[in-house]
Length: 360
Ligand SMILES: Cc1cc2nc3c(=O)[nH]c(=O)nc-3n(C[C@H](O)[C@H](O)[C@H](O)COP(=O)(O)O)c2cc1C
Image (cartoon, rainbow, N blue to C red; front, side, top):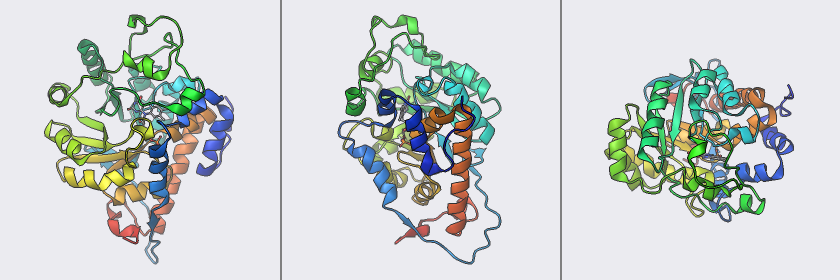
């Protein structure tokens, strides 16, 4: 592993990852669904926002602390769940989780991790972490995942609901990206899928590993039995947000899966205010999709998000330098957030209000 991850700023991160990754993995990480309208919209929504710089506030001390589900966090951002991290770097999930723990940032482990949630828990020992759940076609397997997450000290289940079937990800398809059915998946039993030995496009690979028959009544049952708070990830519609809370979820993650599912879905930042209004004080609202800089985090928080997740940047950082790369990226992001807070005159997270947005 190179000790220098090859980037010194957030702006240099993506090119460092491009240098480190072969073309088909790059297409898997960077690509979205269809023509990538939603993927581009996520980013554009942030790029089109402006912030008011504010003068003559004493910003000698900046406090980034906040709370997620009642638990104190050092920063209002977290690492969103992403599958197959060993494809981008041999250290895989445990490298990413170790870096997150060292930097005091919450890590979300995907059901589709190469390494098991127990191994990740050990790597991130002492640091808070969430487990992202893909409901399995066999209910016994879902129960076992939930039980294991509880036993391994995960603090919440992040239930992904926007991928009952996978979107058509044209960019990765064109690049010939496939998955080997024998690839280790530490949370699922690789021996029990009857799909042969040939590499599979991701959509076929996911078919046996994510159920398409999970409905609102199933959510109520899961929330009652999980023994962990449930956050519903992949909500764009205010009506779905309302229903998730009424079904027992503690909150929602406004997400379109990083533009990888329904191409044509709105940008998450555009959808955020409607969801925030629908949820009111009945739960917590998080957002992911297109968050890259401190200023993006400020904009999302000003519009009502409690915290934001970052997906691709975490993979770029892991690809560029393994654990050291992720540590550098997280440190840069924290510093960028502090700078943006200071220059908008916000000394602490509760001071981020809508009036930092220009023109309002
Ligand atoms: C390569 C890749 C793999 C992903 N795997 C998962 C996953 O296993 N589970 C999940 O809930 N979301 C998954 N996502 C979606 C992310 O959790 C998140 O919603 C998205 O990446 C946020 O957008 P951003 O990449 O622009 O930050 C994945 C995203 C990417 C880019």
